[in-house]
Image (cartoon, rainbow, N blue to C red):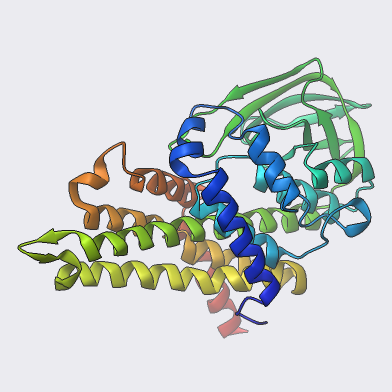
Length: 360
């Protein structure tokens, strides 16, 4: 596994970073969409599609780039750094990986995702009910469905004849109800989706190992997004410490501020190594190693919210204001920390695994 980006990956990163700075800045794009349920505009979404970002993981025969999760992690990190609020992760990563993990034959859907004309999302977390298939009709309630308001197609796991299968639902179909579930992070759009006798298309069987693999994929991609957000707020704090003066000198010259900056840097870089390994493992490792890598990524990057919290201490009073971006980064990272449980749960799982391996 190479921890360094290739020339092509660096070019992808730099191109996307420039696009987001010019077309989807926090001040000009993100803040305007904090209360928008779709989290994106047509112009920015088309721009991402033109760059190939929406079809990054789609096989070349369906119009995509056929790249790996490592490249998806490069994009996710830049979108996290820019606090991008749109449905890229849901459509370009979760939906595409779901179709691949379950072996679904959906060329039209993949082509639409690749060229940006179709936005899809996946309902993995079903905390408030289940979906049951009766023929090709789905009924049930799904909670915490990301980007449902922006999506044209919802991929949902449902029970049918004692087995679980993957179904596609048109979100504009009769019987589909989408209600916003507001959380602490306004840049993440989540919804409760109720299905009342909705016509659906069965795409593939959904065996437990494929469901687990998809869950790992989504967790790893979200970790890369969080890494980008933490990196960005760290750089903002360090830059501020270089120019903000107290007692006639930059606050960055004070040992207390230096220690805070070092603590932030250490947390980000510890998380980075785990995220990079997990992105590689998502494609290359066996199921056991992949899952362990995803657990490590969550365990160590789940604490990235402390980076934004510490950054606000460096900013002082200005960091608490609505006009400053620090609070948006803190909320993004708090949302990640809570995603599928806090990091302590994953650290416990890691510890248990180490103890078991030591006894065997």
